[in-house]
Image (cartoon, rainbow, N blue to C red; front, side):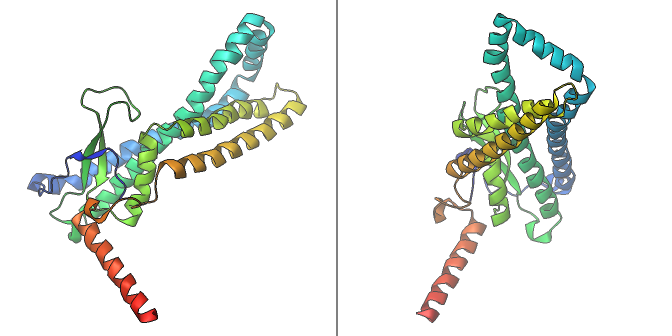
Length: 264
């Protein structure tokens, strides 16, 4: 069972929801899922759509502006040494965190909509909120810690897989930030690869660099993700599981033992 935040500081108290909550929660979870989906779609649109916009809509002005800055030694140092790294980090690492912090919450919300309409989940809480220590997650500083909501009360292998991305999207990870820097640089080179005002030979160079940088971020990002977030359920003992998940796990262990006895 993958958990974000401190499970001892959560709203998972086992109490039965009220009648009003049971009646309204399908609509509530649906609205929450739509909001997080909209945030994810907006981020994708800005990240991807800004490339052709900058390349084609204002190509001449963009190329001239960059050229003017690079022709001035002082402005060149500021642009290359300060502004460009900030842009790369904002697009690469910032884009990763916005996207990965949003889509798991949308998926979990829609999962709870289905559960709210399923008789086997009637009368029980579907999600809870846990708090994380200050400075351990993304987002603005808070006095009592960041509230990490929409975590499943009754986990399944599917929700555990989604929760791995949830944790990765809300937990600060230096390795992941560094892994996404090539992707941020690829955003810059992709604009150069498409801009009509750029010489043809640079189109090829920028295009090749874009592919290489995206490949580097993918490789480094996968390694950082696997190193930071354990496999679903790894490292969590039976006592850390919910009652439903504990019963399922004990049944799995019983079947494994019976198979070993038959084969042995």
